[in-house]
Image 1 (spheres, rainbow, N blue to C red):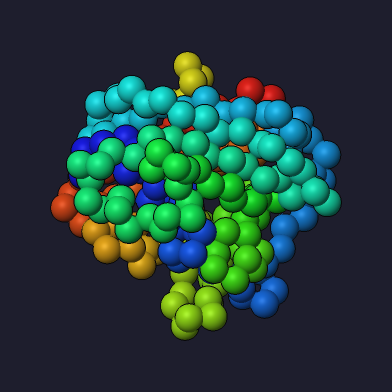
Image 2 (cartoon, rainbow, N blue to C red; image 1 turned 120 degrees about the vertical axis):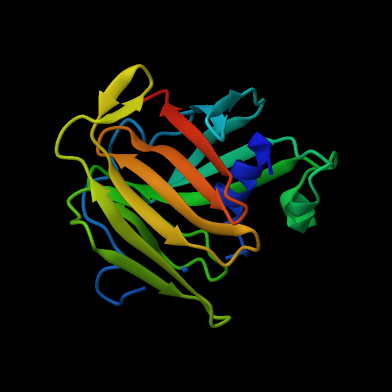
Length: 217
């Protein structure tokens, strides 16, 4: 699966929006303020795609279109190649008339972490807490009986993650997968820049990664 769109569909879309999740006390809430530059209407996110270590061109947009009670609606618009049969699993309601990916996801973005509501039940689910410790887990059980687990697997003590011409600290979270062909998904996050990269590990041994950079932060 060597196409950049696969990553977008798998990570930001397939892991939420009806494809795919609360420790009652730790997996469904975060602290902090949503009154931050990143969490504003009109903020856009540039992206670069890396497939098995090689960067690919991609045309599409990621933008915050609304913020309600601190919760941001993020719109994703990208073309879907017809040659990738895997992506035909995406439900028609998440495509436009031309068959391109056109969907919205919701995130609570604070200075302390990120929460998303992009599961079938629209329940809040912690993506990261910046003060987390390695080994911390966030678990969500969906109404269909399936469970998704996110675990903090690494936390920088020094600037060691190359991103956007800089070297920054990250909190790295891995997520289990219920998606055929996908072994796991990893989120690389930073307290200032939010989600800076997302990587999909495929069962065939290949990897796809998207690096994200917010216009406002």
